[in-house]
Length: 192
Image (tube, rainbow, N blue to C red; front, side, top):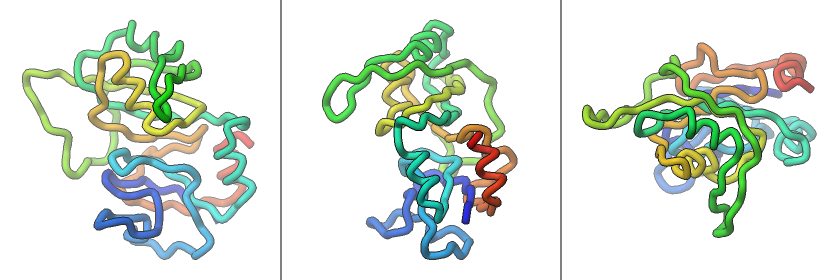
């Protein structure tokens, strides 16, 4: 079984309770018991999450040797520059488990504001501080990597949404929406 969801902001990427935060169990959908998320999105991130009962696919997507692209739309504080995008594309040094880590090359470009679902609560608007949007595609997934990367080039992340996993996208999805997919759709979308 395969499901795509648009994980809402502040929801945990798990079914089990942890404090008072909402979980995947709070979505308006009756998931089978043997379905689990492939990977995670932090509570303060939103966007595309794949859930499946396919253990082989889970292993393939989580094992770093089988690289797959994930694309994120990122709203950053400040007027993003081409120089910052170039640095992100070449890789930057961030801290992972308290040690310096140089990120792998990525694709990074300035984009117009994307058509994402409304976020609740919305990003705080400050007239004196501009914001910009960035599309960044990675094939690695260190903890809070995108946030650390944008901060390292001087543009802190305000909003982070995973838009795509390979060619599976959140296009047209609402926050909290669940889509059931066939194995053929998932394998084609993941280029497998």
